[in-house]
Structures are given as C-alpha cells and as structure tokens.
Length: 153
Image (cartoon, rainbow, N blue to C red):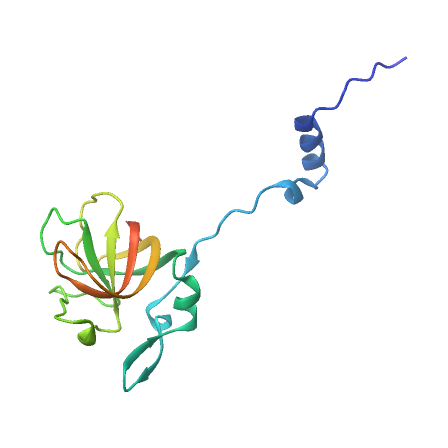
C-alpha cells in the first residue's frame, strides 16, 4: 500500500514546471521598451516639433536608448545630455523653442562616473516629455529620462 502525501502549492508548481506548464504560472516580466533618436518626433509644424506616437505611448514608462554623453556642466552633476552623435560641447538651450531634435536630458538616480563624449552608452530610465525648467540649473528640456542609469556598450 502506498501512502499519499498532501501536495503542497510549491510541489504542484514544481511538477507543472517540469512538465512544461510553468510559464503559464510565472508573472510577466516588465520589458524595457527601446527607443531611438529617429523615433522621438513624429512631425514638424509651424508650432515646432511634435512628439511621435511612440514617445506619447511610452511617457511614464521605463525605456532604453543609446547615444553619446555630451560633456557635463560640472563633474559632480547628477544629469547630462544624451545626444545622437558625439559632441564636444554641451548643447544648452535658452528656451524650449531652440530645443534640438537629437538630444535627451538624463537625470541619474545616483552619481556615476562620466564617460568620454565619443563612447556610446545605453541609458535606461523613465521617459518624461513636455517643456520643463530644472529649478537648480535653469536648464530647459523637452524630453527627459528620470531615475536613469547608463552603461557603456
């Protein structure tokens, strides 16, 4: 006679996983959406650049974008400008009307060592859009990544 042991939730899930059913019970992992500089704006009108549908959909979401770090204002800054192409000078704007279409401001979640402007990096952070003035620096931006981190690629 074989003794039956009660089947725990953990052993049930392990058994189902071994049989190939485990994927149905795993929570979906939030994927980081990728964005590139060609996808930032959808059109240009007499009022200026208009954000693309993709940027509108991803606003408030975690995204990844690759580019180049423009030289920071100061070494201890916790933000920098990400550009589509390497820059030797930081592209500061006096107003959002002058905002170039190939840059994104990056606000880091922690201080990181800055890299050379010719080194490609991948930045991940929460996408924010719309005209905003940084209260500490007066820097005006249209697109930002908040709580961001980067790595060289």
